[in-house]
Image 1 (tube, rainbow, N blue to C red):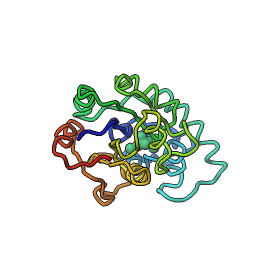
Image 2 (image 1 turned 180 degrees about the horizontal axis):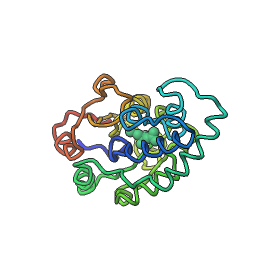
Image 3 (image 1 turned 90 degrees about the vertical axis):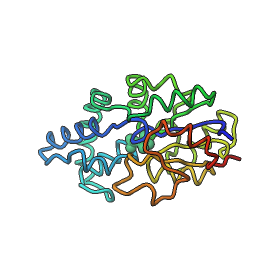
Image 4 (image 1 turned 120 degrees about the horizontal axis):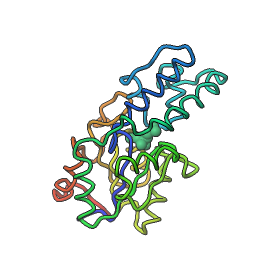
Length: 227
Ligand SMILES: O=C(O)COP(=O)(O)O
Ligand SMILES: [Mg+2]
């Protein structure tokens, strides 16, 4: 049995966005007279929106808060850089276009839910040719609460006229798993994404995939259960 809606996360699931994010983190750090962080560290800090990424970059770790004055100087620097560079080096992962096309050809509606801010989400989806696949896109600042809160998932399901348990979420991080569990939506995760340096299998998604074009076979296997 197929889901009645498939919801995709963006960063780390569809798009490898770290090259552009790290470039702008490092530009920002240089302007502040500080050391660059580099792609490996930025990889661990993506997933809770660009504001949280900037805060993490300033303190050099996942948890904690930077000096507020420095954040107020830093954040506009990052935003300006990323507005001009959000899809310069970002690429869809191998298998993504094929996987999305296969789900579309199966007649299943698709939505995208990201914690990336709306002003960056829309251009990125458009420039990488992903926008036409999605009937709806919710960004990190589209609603009062974002993933790991279930609100974007329950809202999207309602907008498509289905129950959350009739949808499938495809993500890459603990925030996706928590949001999906809280919404009652089955969740499959990509093994290659960004999960703060942890293997996503630890969060026990319903299944994992190495490439998105494995999704049709996973649906055919009957391993996933929808209400
Ligand atoms: O932190 C981000 O901006 C990316 O978030 P996403 O993985 O929800 O797309
Ligand atoms: Mg993600």
